[in-house]
Amino acid sequence: MSREALYFIYKNTMKINPQNILQHELIGLRTEVEDSTNREVEGLFGTVVDETRNMLVIENASGKDKKIPKAGTTFVFELPEVRVRLRGDMLVSRPEDRIKK
Image (cartoon, rainbow, N blue to C red; front, side, top):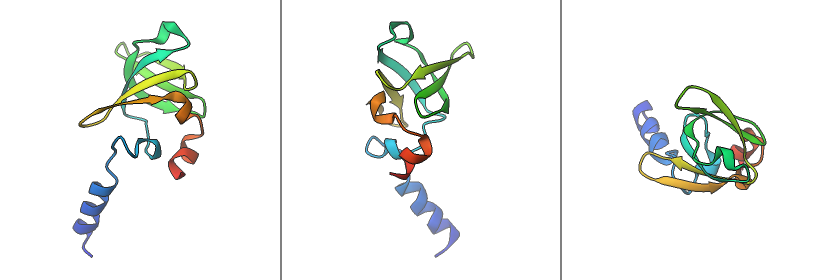
């Protein structure tokens, strides 16, 4: 199989979508904190720049990094064609372990 054919298959089967977002890297995605037990971070919008077991680090419009706990927070992620709402409790795990599932 040619390199171009393999790339085409990879590109079209590994594309991030609402059904497989939990198995994908979140760094680089635009997100909004829709709901949180910490009311001060609700409405925060920015780009995910880092992820740990329990936190997402979001860079806001002014360039500041905000550490947001996953548990107790609802995130809305912007994908190429749709917005996806996820409970942060579903994301609590090390990123490399979540991607393997």
